[in-house]
Amino acid sequence: MIKQVGRTVINPKHLATCHCGAVVLELDLPDGIVDPRRCNCSICRRKGAIVASVPLSGIRIIKGQEVLRLYQFNTMTAKHYFCSICGIYTHHQRRSNPEQYGYNVGCLEGVNPFEIENVPMNDGVNHPADRGAS
Image (cartoon, rainbow, N blue to C red):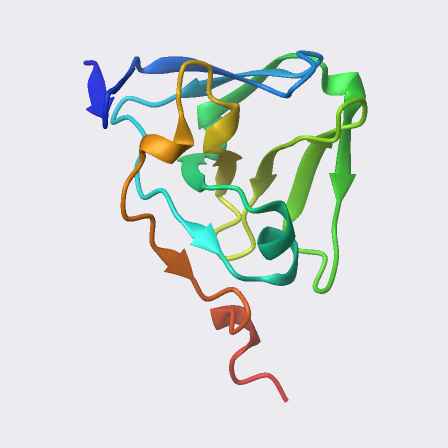
């Protein structure tokens, strides 16, 4: 099944790359880009990416495992990955749902994230996992 987002057609298997091409991911997107969003937490605010999510099984690193670097902060739950050559954030294992990866929509080959309209904002400053902590 092929889905369309804006003027962009998404195949179920899709490639995502960093800027220099050292990292290549294969994403399983049978329903296209689902639930694209931005976040206002300290790291997302700085990177400015639109992200969407897939199950952990929905991303396969087909090139560049050795150049991916991991960044963690605060609770050390989320795992943010970026290319150590060009610095582009490609994906992260989500804090709010560790069974999913968030991926950088801007890394999808053939997708212009600026064509996605009305991207909602998640309140990462007031993350649900932080509520009720004493």
